Amino acid sequence: MISAADIEKARAILAAGGVVAVPTETVYGLAGDATNDLAVARIYEAKGRPTFNPLIAHVCDMDMARREVAFSPLAERLAAAFWPGPLTLVLPRAPTSSVSLLASAGLPSLAVRTPNHAATLSLIRAVGRPLAAPSANPSGAISPTTAAHVREGLGDKVDLILDGGPCAVGVESTVVKVEEGRATILRPGGLSRGDIERVVGARVASGGASIEAPGMLESHYAPRARLRLNADAPMQGEAFLAFGDSPAAGPGVLNLSRRSDLRDAAANLFAHLHALDRHCAETGLARIAVAPIPETGLGEAINDRLRRAAAPRGD
Ligand code: TXA
Ligand code: MG
Image 1 (cartoon, helix red, strand yellow):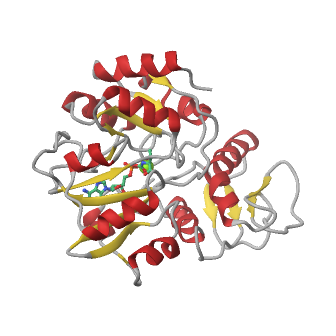
Image 2 (cartoon, helix red, strand yellow):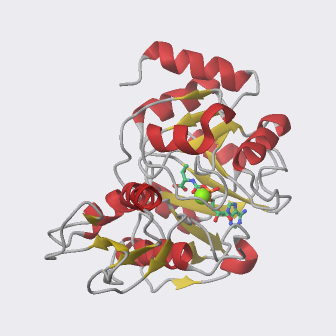
């Protein structure tokens, strides 16, 4: 879907300080040269994002990663097990790091990840520098899992959108901070806690979100319609996001996974929320009821996103 010519075009835009929406296995990212302050500023500007929110530096391999951050033995093991893949590691910034201080919000740590997407990896390799890339949506809106979502949300604020089709995982990466031989999950995501704990060899705590990941605002990923969680069935005037075997049917009903598969549900989550939100806007419905999702495996990340989308907003 993405040709060598597309990658060369994207490379040239990025090298000149532009911003390009790129597919990853999790969600689409709004990418800029992470070493270029101006490019990073353009990312924040396009998203309308508070500038204290640090970004992930996307790298193509361990050589590039090692120039940017210091790996402890535990961090090495996690990277070896899950990269390329939906894991972001927050590690001490290396003295050789070239990443803009604006991108890391002036923190002594830096978030890095190797995305599992061939075209985007080729692009990073061609640029030769890490790409800073938050999810390619306006700040506070639902994350994009298709090129159409990006176009809808950011339109002409991006110089180019590379269309790699729908994202395979569908929720953002799991953010893990590794410090003094200990791993902490700062944001649940596309890699489950169980997978991480198998490699760590111990239970892994969650935490630090408010301090460590200032981007974790309560109301995030918000559709325009309101959300009602843990709903067994829709009420009058509600669209319905079902999960598993459900008798609900009709134009305002979508199912995250009829066979109750949490991987399918994660992959469908943002696309279904986008679609039901559009349906509500078109038909005048004010609310989306959401079926209960088990808290196991990827359910932790799905429920995290749903709770944020349902959180009360300032308006
Ligand atoms: O899957 C993903 O992670 C997507 C794709 C595009 O790679 N990216 C993404 O980026 O979700 P963003 O910027 O929306 O989320 C990055 C998360 C935020 O919660 C941010 O606060 C946290 O990582 N973060 C980044 N740098 C950090 C740091 N130095 N310390 C703690 N948290 C950090
Ligand atoms: Mg985001």
